[in-house]
Image (cartoon, rainbow over all chains, first blue to last red; front, side, top):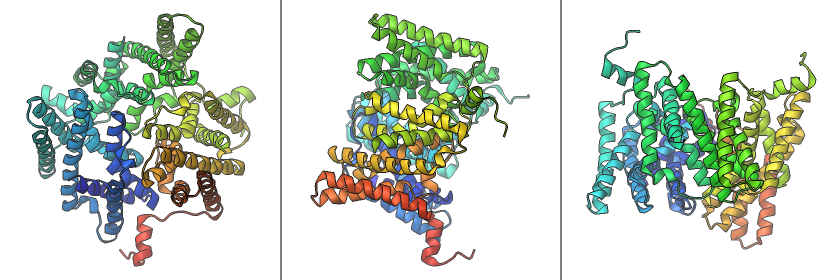
Length: 207
Length: 207
Length: 207
């Protein structure tokens, strides 16, 4: 799952940079950032040297995603919107949320820490890539994406507290994250804005 | 003071995200980032696991600020411009600058380190939130905001060097930061740009 | 070389902030960020307290660059485009890439880690400054800048692997970085975009 996620994340990030006419160095940086900034931030937060800097196999998977994006760009219009990419990206979201929850739990953080690090590990790379592309992190404005990782992190925390085995918690975390993500894509789920939420509570604003 | 600051910072950050039509997840992230990114960066710089990830009570205060912003948005136009919010924000600026100066001094940084970490702790969260909102960090362009934390940090450093007790240094740091901030708001203080500064030295540019 | 680099980087960063009408605090922050964020990120990644926070002499050099930018702005139109600045900036790029490669090697990272940290140390500060200025990091979109640090990092890694002395590796890394940068400026080198790269492989797109 981690393998699929690294390739998919790098592919999605690179495809966004290609669309913005970044040069090949920029395409590679945005792709690798999408794949690795989440995990690197996780490692910095729990105070250890990022794995990315010592493991060559992970980086190779990221580079493969970059190369795929550049190659597919010649034959497809938007390789990052392809159903296979969407599926692989959802699998990556689940894998990274689970890894984040495990690392945070091992580091002894609070419940909030587990959920926050699961979310950052899963969605932080994409958000950072959007900053490099000089636009809003899309996960903050629309879509139901990082919220799936939040739900996965909550699941992990509840299951580990309920004294189930860590393996069960990890499997459930991944299942919840991938499941809610795929459902969100199919159904077009979105979270309301605060304005829409206010209208929901009080009825439409007549100003 | 720290309590007031966390609530005020989260409220101000969330209100900015609400105005930009972020969804509720985005509103919560920007609010929590405003409250906690400064302290988290401080902890990373002095190489310790961020307190935010282990203390649930701090996060609860941040979440309270987010909820307040969403709730007040229904009844007020700009809850972040309300005089009570401005006052609470100034108190937070003072509290966070002081905490930053104390942590940096304990970590054995140079005078520059003390001032830099006091400023980052106090103003870094707001600056990061502006990056998430895809605009200039406002503290770099206008207003007299981070400069109050710089003055507070300088005060702390001078007082501790002069061998006064740490308690006195902390009290003076907070007083200077809050005092200059409130005066700056009342008097509309702004720092000059380099262009205006050049004209100040040389007279107006006739080009 | 490090001395020249710190002054040049701070000058270039400050000059960009001056052009965007940032106030003097903002000019200082962007200038110091350009000079120090690369090295600070390097230190965070290898899990040590950033040198910037404990060494006053380095910060003084950065402040000198800021003051130079503000002063020269009165008499020159673009002090950051001046040939002397371009040369000093290239020297800084070489010095910082070399320092990054040395620190990463000492920290025991993989080949990728050495190259990545050399590049981040050399070009990360400028990229972060561009984010503060609310625009694309220019190194990702155009120019042949960070790529020189990549080549320097590759050189360092190859030479140290080939069992030459570390001193030789450092000298070669700096030479390659500065040499390719100066050539790139003179010849107007740019990397292709993925689109141009596709056309290069397949011939022009007739759509």
